[in-house]
Each structure stands twice: as structure tokens, then as C-alpha cells.
Length: 228
Image (cartoon, rainbow, N blue to C red; front, side, top):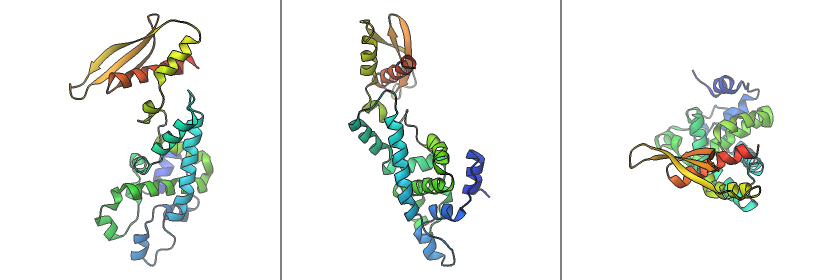
């Protein structure tokens, strides 16, 4: 039978020493109400800790992002990454909802797929991991759960095309050109691949559901190559 302990050991080679804390992280109050003989607490206290840890981890990643993001945009980005729906999706991505213990009534009401609960459990889980192994273990899990670089809203916040233009113009007056390399998929759901060229040299390629997003992706790849 699969358990959260087996999952952690198999995927991250993490052994949980304080199992009660991890049990608490996945326990809903309704489960304790229906099982009076069960020891421990529900997830709420440890969720408080996990909330702070996730927020700090995201803030650190955004602060060290290359290219740099200004303070206002970092604040916006952090809010989008740690919002309820995003946190719930992170738990779904790791496929951990199956380990939540809840009462029969909550189960029947569909709570196991409710964003508010899944977001709380994700934070509680991270809090439990932190108490067990510190930020080293937390970092390994959050790297898989939260893709800062490819987060959907990132292209809306960082204008890679403008940053690439500024970078190129600091050394030369050459003009950047964006060209369509390919278009695949059905007409109602196309996928565009754009290339960004400098003096006929391909600097980067990127894909997206629109040409604009594909251009931003190409500019991002070019920037990463140029600033190494």
C-alpha cells in the first residue's frame, strides 16, 4: 500500500523521522471528529509554517531570476505563484491528494479536489518536510512542484523582447528580427515556433500558442545564451 513515506523515499530519498508531524499535515479536522481514538492534530498549525516557507522560497527564486525583475513585478509574480489555485495545482502535480485523511461527509462533498483544501495541505506538507530535513529537502520538492521559469504568467510580467533589444544595443546597432520557423497543430489550436535573428545569426527559438508568446520565448532563450 502506497504511503506518503514510501513516496518521499522513492522520489526524493527522504526518510521522515517525525511521522506524527507528517500525519498532521495530511489530516483534516473532520477525520479527527469522526475518529476520536486517533492521536495528533489537523493540518492547520503546520500549514502556517509551510505558508511562510513557500513564500520565502518563491521570493528567493524571483530575486535571483536572470534577467532581474523589479520589485513591483516580483510582488505581482509571487502573488500569482502562491495563490490558492496555484498551490492546489502544485499538490495535484505531485499527486498527493490521495493521502489526505478526511471525514466521510467531507469526502462526499468533493473536498479532495477543492482548491482551498489542497492549497492548505500543500503548505502543510512543505512545513512537515521542513521540520524533518530543513530547506535542503524542501528545495528538492519545490523545484519539481513550482516551475518559476516557465510559470504561465511570467511572459506577461517580463518583457524579454525589450530586454534582449537593450542588451544587443549596448554593443551594436544591429537590428533584431523575428521570423516564423514553423506552425503546427489545428487551426483552432496552433503552436507557433519563432526564431530571433541578429545579422542572420539565429540567437534563440521559442514556441507558443500565439506568435507574440513564441517571440517572447525565443527572446528569453537568446538572453540566457548571451548573458552566460
